[in-house]
Amino acid sequence: MRKLFSILAAAGLAVAIAAPAQAAPAWDSDGSWSKGVKWLEGELVNGALPAPAWDPATPADPDWGMTIDMLIAVRASKLEQPLAQALSQNIAANVDSYTTPSWGAGLIIGGATAKVLFASVISGGDPLSFGGHNMRQRTLDRIDAGGWIHDSDGNGGNMFDQSLAVLGLAGSGGVPDNVVQYLLSQQCAEGGFPLFPTAGPIGNCQASAADANDDVKKLWPEPHVDGTAMAIQALYGAGKKQQADKAVAWLAGMQQPNGSFFDRWASPVPSTNSTGLAAQALYAGGKVDQASKAAAFIRTLQLTTANAGAASAHVGAIAKGTADFADGTADGICEVKPEFENCFIDEMDPWHRATTQALLAFTLVPMHRIGVDSPPTPSSPSSPSPSASAPGSGGGLPVTGPAAFTMAGVGAAVVLAGMLLLALARRRRVSVR
Image: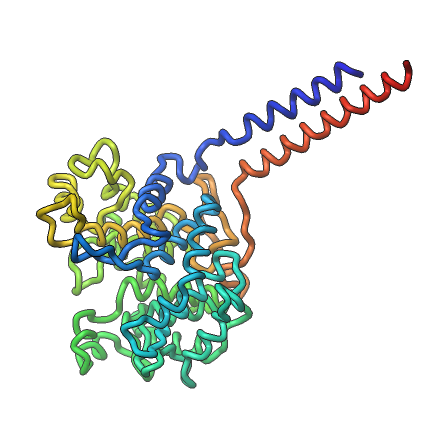
C-alpha cells in the first residue's frame, strides 16, 4: 500500500512539473501568429499600441482603436489569456478617452462606441458594465431611426462602424432589426459592400461613388474589400446567410493570383490589412482554400530571423505591402524616438496596423465566433459550415484558458491526492502502534 501511495504522489508531481511545457497548436506550427503577437506585445506603451509619433520629445498618444484590433487578434486564438485580459482591462479603463476624445468638445464617436462594445463581448467582460459603462446602451443611443450608427454630431459611421455595431449588439443580447436592415440596404448589386454607406439603399455602388458629393467617397470606388469583409461577418453573426454568401462570392472574385487582396482602384497594390480581413471573411463563408492562400501570402511579408535584415529587432512584424517590406529589411524601420536622430516620419505605425489585422488570417476564426470557436487545425473539415452558427450568436462570452492550465490543475489534484493518501497511511501506522 505504501508503495502505491508513493507512486501516486510521484506521478502527480511529474504531471505538475511537465504540464507547462506544451507544443504549439497545429494551426500555428510555424509560429507565425505567436511571433506576431509577441512583437505587438513588445510594442505596447503603458498598455496600448501607440498612435503615430511626430515629435521625439513628446510621447505618442495611445491608440485604443488599434489596441482593440490587437485584442481581437489575440482573443481569436483562445491563447495568451493573461495578455488578452490585460488588454481588455486597459481598454475598459479608457472608454471615455477613446469614445469621447478631448478634441471633440462633447463629441461622442459612434464607431468607437460600437468597437468598445464588441471588445467587451469578445473579452468575456460585461457589456452592460464594461469599465463601469453600459456599452450596449451607449451603442444603441448612437443609432438613428433608420438603423445607421452616427456620431453625436450627426456624422454617419462607415462600414466598419456599422458592422461592429451589429456584431456587438448581437453578442450582448440581440441586434435590433433596423440595424441589420440598414446594413442589408447597403449591399451593392454586385454583392459587395461600400466603405462609406449612404442614407438610402445603395443599389449600383459604382454609380453611387461617381455621383457622390463627398470627395472622400470618390477615392474608394465601390464596392470595397475591407468594408465587404466586415459586413460579411456581421451578416453571418445576425443570421443573414443568403446575403452574406452573395458578398462572399464577390469577395472571392477579388482575390489576386498570389492570394492577396487590395482595395481595387484605390490601392492597386496588395495590402496585408485587406488580405487578413478578407481571409477571415472567406473562411466564414466556407472558402477555406482561398482563405489559406491569403494567409500564405501574408507570411511572405512577415519578418523572420532569416529575412528581417536591417529590421531584425522586429521579427514577427508584418508589413502592409511589398514596398514597406523591402524598405524595412533594407534600411530598418524608422521610429520617431530620441535615439533615431534623422527620423521625421513614423514608419512604425503602418507595421502596427498591418500586423493586428493580418494576424486574423492565421487564426481564421470569424468575428462573430471569437471567444466561441478555436482556430481550425490543418485536419479540420474543409468547410466551417457558416449556417451552423446560431443567428445573433455574436462573439460569445466564455473565457477559456489554454490547455496547459487544465493539465497543471490535474497534476496539482493528483499531487494533493497523493499527499492525502500518504498522510492517511502515516496516521494508520501510528494508530496500529
